Image 1 (cartoon, rainbow over the protein chains, first blue to last red):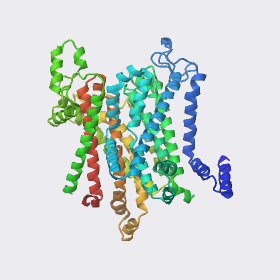
Image 2 (cartoon, rainbow over the protein chains, first blue to last red):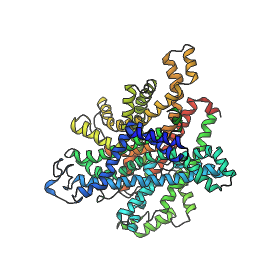
Image 3 (cartoon, each protein chain N blue to C red):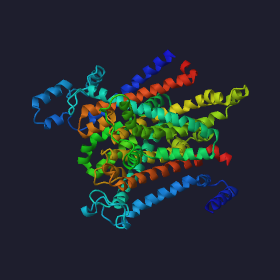
Image 4 (spheres, chains in turn brown, cyan):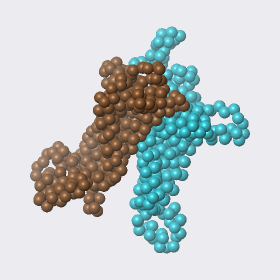
Length: 314
Length: 319
């Protein structure tokens, strides 16, 4: 029903005039996105997760660090829907709270990766010449850096200093987000550069240039908005990759401290009790898996929806 | 071909130099004294620490320290592990074969799964087989290796009790039994890593075969009477592999990340678990050396990917 209404408005818009090309373009994209059934399911699941971690702690008012040895390592029950850990702490409450951090890390790291990648890719593609060559060599070099070992090395070397300077939570958060984002901008830079190389020769940019638009205006008003399609897809996938990176760090015991129970951290604590309390590991692991799977499907749906080759076909 | 090989090898030298500069800068920027451990250790007198500082020239300007570091790395002087009390290179050489064995087996497993499934999916796009394979691939690369590892332990070690979940280097059995024990303990780490790689590789393979299969030369190959099998293997798959190699090469750093996690979960005595153990024990020389080894492995596998291009598409090596 919603799809039909949307398509009718698109047709209506086109019939009236092409006065609002941008809004109808986005509506068209939305219509194509909704055709990807799994992407829609992914969006619903992800939104449910976001609502759960944002509103959940207000509804499920169990403290995350209430220790109760009488109820330790209990399987799921009515008083503890997802069971308890070895200190008798409620796993649901910890997951709802930790999920906020896990998702926030994913989004913040993605924003950093996209900002750096777009800046470098745009400079490289627009300016060209020696600068382009140098920036691309730097990008290639970053692409051959071993991600996780380097992440571990940086966290190892800088963790204590940042923790002292900014406090345990903020310090570790900033460090992890900056390092994950700072090691994931390269694909975005390459995509943006490729888009810029082809777009800067297009007629609409040429006409803007001949009308006297200064370079910055050409880039921001004309080239950048048209090169955002692949960046949006890459950014979506980056959120998933950043969530996995943070969980991996926490799972190795080198991410957030135990009082910040991100999903990876809960798994780290759970892994030595796998034989008595499998629920302790299965719930946070499933949360990570479902989030990442939903984001990957959303990325796939966006890729189909934003692919200009498909606009003519359908 | 040998000229191409030489050129590719030479271009990886500046990359290695860049990586080593990045690593060294990170270490130099890091707060704290590399000999902090010795300072708090009452068994080490202060003059020993001062001598060490002088030996490593810690108070010299940065570029000089970097140059000296590179020279000593190249001479094989990788420092001394604070914790294990042996030279770092000995420690790493003990551990490296295990890591390479697990990584190599996982790569072989991934190739054996991904190429046939990806090709078959592309030959029958949107069939039930293709949809099942695509869904499984999506699930496969959305499942983080640490969770797959735990699920495998839960299912195969705890529930079914088929496989051991701790990797042991010192198996006492002899003869065939020794080999069997080794294979048995390697199954789970190799499967976790291999399936993770196979998932994304299958998708790359499917997309690449779909692109190639419509091209004219495939029609030509069929028209001149080649059997379907020969057309598929020599014309379709071989050409489809070129973009797949590119994409897999870009994934290599991720694969090493997965290897660290797998080694940690199954306690495989490789360089990945050595890295984690040294980080937890503040053993800086080992941490630096293992990170550098991982960088070398990444560069080496990119080089291997380049050589593979030259073999898949001979035109590349003549350019």
